[in-house]
Amino acid sequence: MRYVDLLNAAINNALRGSVALANPAVDAMPLAQTLFPEVSQSVSEAAAANEYKRSLLRREKSLTLVAGTATLTDDVLTHYIADATLIDPAVLNKRYAWRDYPDFVKRGDKRIGVFTLKGGNTFQVIDPNVGFAVPLTTTGARTLNVPCVVVAPAVYTDQVVCPAEIESDLIEALSEALRGQLPKVAGEAA
Image (cartoon, rainbow, N blue to C red):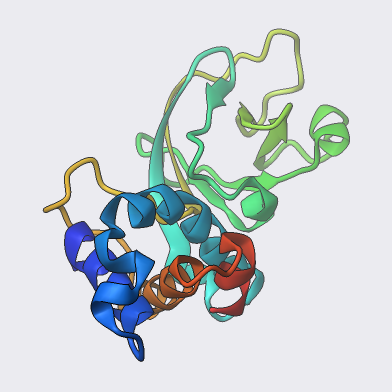
C-alpha cells in the first residue's frame, strides 16, 4: 500500500460515524503525517513484543564495521537485538551470537563470533577465533537481520514496507490517534 493510501484510509476510518464537514479531521493529512512516526513506533513495539508477530518486522540491515563498530539506524528495535542474526556475506560459514556487553568482553568460547550493543545504537562485533581487544579489530560488511519499526517513506506515492497484518494495525491505530486517543495507547491497542 502506498503511504498516501494508508494515511487516507486512516483518515476515512477516523471520520466514520460523524458528519464529515463538522469533524475537525476533515483536513487531517498533515496531522496524520505528524502522528504516523509515534503510532508506527508503538504498533511496531507491540508487534515485536508478540513472539508470533515479531518476525513480521524483521529487516536486513547492511552494516560496515570499522574497528568492530557500526552505528545502527534509528528504526532498529534495539530492545529485541538478542533475537537478531548476523551474517558475514563474504564468509557464510562464520557463526555469531548475541552477548550482553559484559559477556561480550569476557567471552569464553571463541569458536563463534559475538555481537553486542554498547551505548544505545553502537553495534560491536568480534569475529570467531579472535579475542577482545581495544580497539576491536573486526572490519568489513555484515548483514544484520533484526526487528525494525515501520518507517514512513520519503515520498507519498512510495510503498510502506510492511506486511498487510501490520499495515492494518497501523491504519487502525492511526485512526484512533486522529480521533483523539494518545498515539502510544492507540498503537498498543492495535
